[in-house]
Length: 215
Ligand code: TMP
Ligand code: MG
Image (cartoon, rainbow, N blue to C red; front, side, top):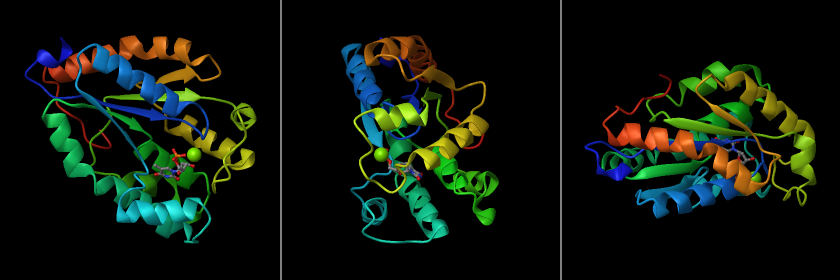
């Protein structure tokens, strides 16, 4: 099996605008990895269960206001506080499926177009976190995501802002990202990422070193 190598677990990240289907795909992937005998965990960022995550949650639910720099730093801190646990799990052979990661940090804050919070700055504060072995980008027109049962009323769930986030993702994506058309049915989408996932899980198990942001 893919877990039998001398190596580590893979870091697989799902990205995309709100309501593009990330959580569904993460669950489907976790289930299929486990069926194949791959030890795997599903995490999401923000991790709202930590102290820092609690502040982020209040901000997103519009119960607290914070300026753009402050909330950006909280999202970043919320990843850095999980760094050692991520590294430990990966080193121990567990594959991590992440529902959002550093790429959300860059895309959402850069979409605000605050001069001192550009993409370059946003990338810099992610440095030292483990790099994804695979970024699966679920691309969807914000008009379509908004039509999916409606937005949940969180702070960023507005079509105009989501369009800016989508442009930021387009700027951030490189040729290593697996970009998929997220308007397809969930099972069909899931089928389209199986091969790429298998490849990175096998490479990680075979001992390919884990990268660091921003290799
Ligand atoms: P969620 O809908 O996946 O729970 O994410 C909550 C919101 O937070 C979503 O609108 C994306 C946004 N976000 C950031 O602005 N910066 C970040 O670093 C992350 C991880 C999420
Ligand atoms: Mg959301």
